[in-house]
Length: 485
Ligand SMILES: NC(=O)C1=CN([C@@H]2O[C@H](COP(=O)(O)OP(=O)(O)OC[C@H]3O[C@@H](n4cnc5c(N)ncnc54)[C@H](OP(=O)(O)O)[C@@H]3O)[C@@H](O)[C@H]2O)C=CC1
Ligand SMILES: Nc1nc2c(ncn2[C@@H]2O[C@H](COP(=O)(O)O)[C@@H](O)[C@H]2O)c(=O)[nH]1
Ligand SMILES: [K+]
Figure 1 (cartoon, rainbow, N blue to C red):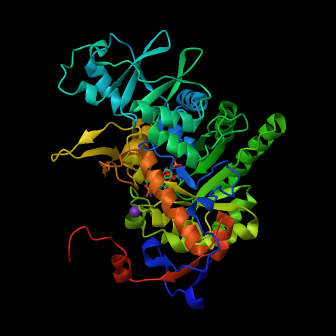
Figure 2 (cartoon, helix red, strand yellow; figure 1 turned 135 degrees about the vertical axis):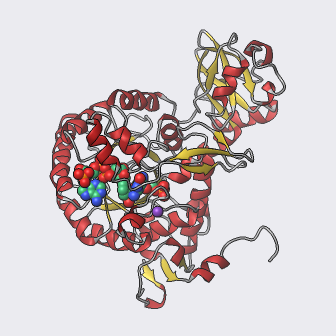
Figure 3 (tube, rainbow, N blue to C red; figure 1 turned 180 degrees about the vertical axis):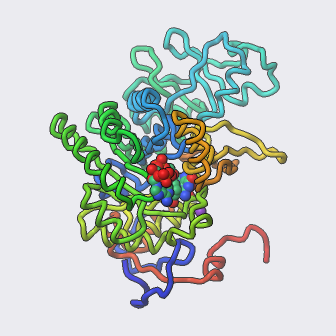
């Protein structure tokens, strides 16, 4: 990346402070852009779901991995639950969507309580594993909540065989005007396909492990028996390990990280699978160099930009995120490793700018909290707008959960040091409520940014981007107006 006209910024910058200038381009189609990340994580788009309890769970992990990103499970989730989640994600189909499954005899109320969990908003009625009906949300309108599913379901208009060509499947849905189709193998339900899902499958490549199963990561903190927990996570089969703490450039991290790397190396020798180790968070050149020397493959960059984060207000510590990414990415290049830009992403442009600044991938938290696939319950405010609750991992709420095995005194003392908010409302976009809708926007924005820069790959984008500095008026000018001035 270079700054426009060779200028040297005189102050620290965040995403809103910068913009990219187009360059002469030989990349004439946005479909010619390859967003595979250079960090050897297996992601085919530069999107990682942040390890936050309100954001990253099974449905999120599965849905994002199917489109080429990956999710990191938070450090606070008990290991048996991590195991269950990883097994479910790896057991789900890399192309077909996971259906909501219900029995004929179930009441409609039960169906409606789970329908909102998936963006396709429909369920498949099964008997002995075979699809016998389909119910959409529309079928349940004005129906008594105690009616049985059998009374509202319809016979599937089309059932497809496993292995069906995606274009043929699309044409079948179009021909029968069906919203979705069950896919079966030997008569048993394997998944469902929808028109939008099929289109996405033609554009995205799933992030998969060497056995073709969807990828998923998990985080560990720096307290307790860190190598033992890392060993467990590797045994469970995670594809990326994130050693995560607020202040990543501290001795406890520099002590724990080489132990995690040793465990990883031993696992790689035994299994032939080398799981990348990510460590953070830092915002300085020295921080990156020390974490690289301690064995990190990837360093997570960002102190204070997160939407749920109060660190800068509480401590004055942090760094505007664009400058942090640029300097840390430069340091990472010197050390032969990569960085992830973590936090503060709220528009597709922020992802493009993080990549321009040298990031290999971008971590997104709160934006994804406000989607159907995040783990929280769907709530409505007084005006009826749908939202989900998000909270910071250093909030009193999260700290209470993380320290539940400590004495009451120690828990209360830990909660005094909160650096995150305990309840934020993340509103769902009524027209784009699913995480794939958000991913579509990010990926289309980023693909387009690459063609403006004349870059086919993330590596080319790193070198070809030309970035300028703007004031608040420049940023404001770029916003669309939905009403007149
Ligand atoms: N990116 C960001 O800006 C931030 C992210 N977070 C996220 O919150 C989660 C929890 O992280 P964390 O609070 O580190 O909790 P952890 O449970 O990982 O523990 C942090 C450890 O670091 C010690 N520590 C020393 N200085 C600090 C400091 N300034 N802030 C926090 N801990 C410090 C703590 O000791 P002691 O308690 O005795 O001081 C404790 O032993 C992580 O997922 C992290 O990514 C949190 C804050 C900022
Ligand atoms: N200072 C804090 N930072 C936090 C907390 N919880 C999460 N985080 C960081 O934010 C990013 C996600 O950023 P977002 O803008 O996409 O929401 C996450 O990966 C952490 O690094 C917190 O309680 N305090
Ligand atoms: K913030």
